[in-house]
Length: 168
Ligand code: ADP
Image (tube, rainbow, N blue to C red):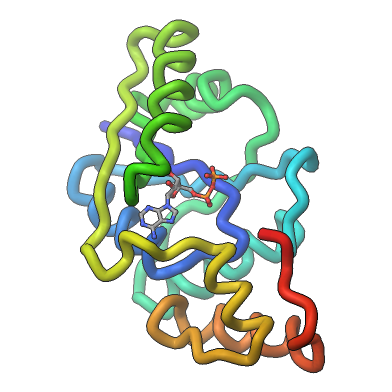
């Protein structure tokens, strides 16, 4: 059985992430969405909230997948889960250098683990969690970018805070 992992911060999950999830599903038998719970990155939602929004978004799309947390080295986590492939999304050029560096580092630590980069539908190429939060915090409509569950939570999180946009 081919097991794949799609790791990320998902702060919050967007339709771009969900596009990558649906593409990844065509390539493996089992996909684990792994939420980074490390606290060195300032996030708007807690790891538990981010996982909850992923579960709700998956169920909005009638998908039932495992959502898990990791706070160790990704390659160690992948080994523990018996995964043979890590999926990452590649958007515009800006993602490339960071992703490439990280993939090479992972390859050095775990030569038999494959990293697969998938590109979303072009309507999501410029979409990021930070942009969605920025728009929501300014009172804009984000329904083209996130599922109804995420939209609802973003609106209640940013209600009355339209003067100060989040940092990321
Ligand atoms: P991280 O902090 O690991 O980059 P993110 O949640 O921002 O976590 O992203 C997780 C993965 O999803 C990354 O590979 C990122 O490039 C990818 N990704 C994020 N947004 C999109 C999008 N709109 N389309 C395709 N891939 C995306």
